[in-house]
Length: 76
Image (cartoon, rainbow, N blue to C red; front, side):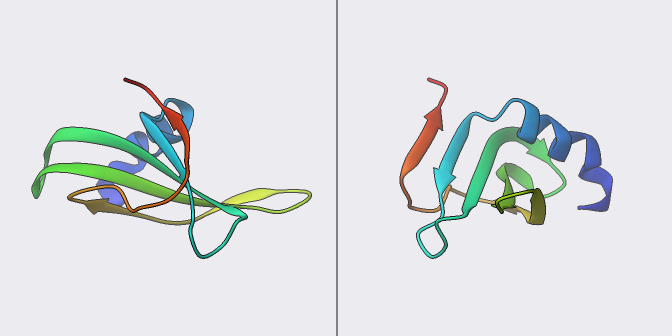
């Protein structure tokens, strides 16, 4: 993920999909699909936790498909 800092920023600024975490209502999962990554076609997921006064990235990872959860944002 070290080489994907630009993509992580892009996902946060312009996500294709945002879902609410099923296990923590203060966490959002931001997704964008990339046809070419070092491991093939994948979704990049950036997990963000929100508090009353701040928000911060918990983790980011590549995945075959978005996790289940309430859809908050979708670009069709």
